[in-house]
Image (cartoon, rainbow, N blue to C red; front, side):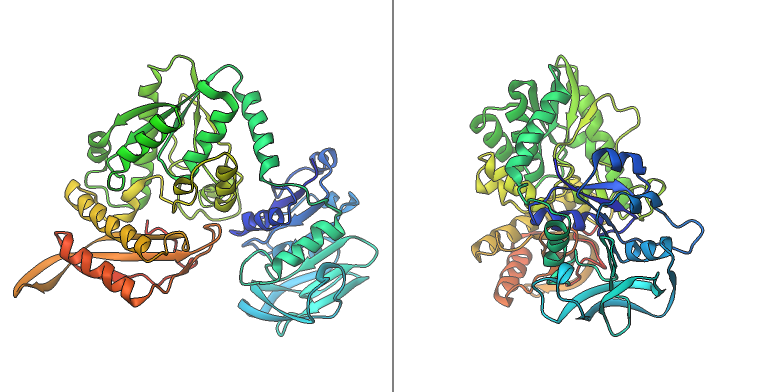
Length: 511
């Protein structure tokens, strides 16, 4: 299959590059920055993109690609660090800039063909760099510049090598998809025939080849990711799949009943229900640190599966709905030049002694791609368009140590948020809206009596893939209705606040 290789030098946006390429209907693969040239020569991708990264190319420990990739005859596009590495490797000079450049900038395009075909002479781009190209090798043409960066886009004359200092993959570069599309389709010659139907067919065959006649168990939460994973695997191997739904005590209101009804009775999948509320909450007692919570939940999750496997003869694989954002945010520092943001329950909390082989058919898809796969597999909109819910459940929306009492407060408050967002017709228009429990008490007055109760924070964000997000300007009447209902209907709460932090610098979830 034709594809574009993305060499990952540790940028938190490397996965977004792959995502934008796929929006051009071209398959992309993320490979380690030090992938041997022999592997690339054997697979012969149509093109190679060098990602951004946090290092300086002149640093002794800076990640470097195999320089032989520049002798494969394959088009190469360097982005930010990737541009600097290309220049540094091929004879130019990179140094510390007099002024760092972060945020929006205007790009003046000198050459409107090729990489910039179809674009106006000036466009907005997103910068994020402290180093800059100081000099270029002989024969390098300047295609565009910004107010702070002379070599903002370059091309090597006579060779299919391009470099850009800005980030075309983020939404803050509105024409970025066109730029990447020009590279993939016009410069690399990709046909643009890849889509989610191709993915489903390939993934189905890959699952069959991997599993053989063995059995698979899957942790079903009822969320988009695990539901689509279940449908995809069920399509591939049918009754070899058993879905195990674990009630960890951290679910939303009435969640257990809804999941059992949908998958057990409607979809006719093999479904085992385990109520492990006491087990999880006992382990989480007095635990406040977010990473410890996540790892405890991940460990208990797998141990519950180990227990359940005794009743499922031949269960060899543990399937999970792990997606791309889960993977990139859980990268261990020793295994990649990027810094870890947080461990994911599917990725960072698995015991080394785990008795199952992992099966993660969605681990290279973004959320909107997962939704499209779900649609094509026939899942209802109530499942496919459901807002994301974290695997660790309400534990990561509950700051501090969780208790049954405070979980009920959060659960009831979250139900109010969901009902009011749906009533306002906003549920399918925004990425996520939810309540967060803050272990902070403040003084209030209700019915002429003094109260000293907890605070609930509201969080609503817009996003396309979960990698970046902006807070939503919810209408005041909606905010007012949510606040009034929570304070009036949820015992133990006397104050509601609204979180207006974007990602970055914050994350979508609070923990």
